Length: 267
Image (cartoon, rainbow, N blue to C red; front, side, top):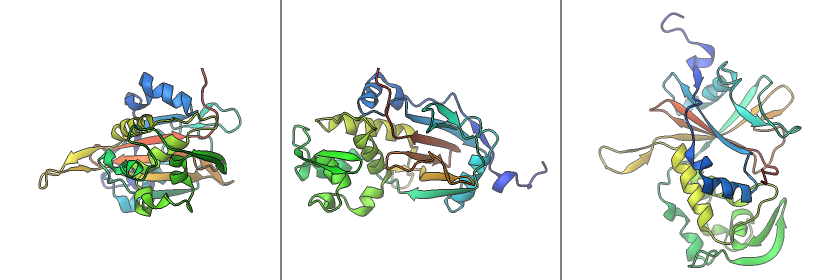
């Protein structure tokens, strides 16, 4: 290909990076927590490299090129609705949706309002409440109420912009878990696991002028459609079925964090 010629879809070529492992998802402690939350065997992170400068305003071209790339198609994993096995996307993507997820938080003090507002006691115990349902989730404590019940008195503890932050999304996903989730009585396992995965997926650098740490990654929540309808992250839509693309424009890596709601591995 001559210099200056664009390859498929705006010149992005991808390569699978199987050697990149995500320690945060495989430590014994995280594994046992994910098992308890019914997410084990249903959550996965994968890494791919790309060869062009990434520009956020061209995110749709980037994501479409990703799904059509011959190095992505045989390597990108998802869970089959029918068999429950890990498969690859055996269909042609016709349309994508890539929603920008703000990612600015660099401190877990972001979650301090949970303590300030008596959702979590000083000793870390989550305050219980009367059982109610917010389909399909059982709400038996103040934490899930804050996450799910929009007309609850403490919902305002986190503003709408706060709730859109990737750090909040990740935390919420872990708190809600899979189909047979056994909820924690204390907050710490959620915070610790959120922090580990967040740090593992994102890239940061020190701003040379201000000396402050800043996140250099861009995050998108991604859905793909074939000629029939939604095909990725699943053919069924669920709040707990998601795929986030975390793009590092400096290293030219994209990390894919995927989860499909269902019954996680038990033993």
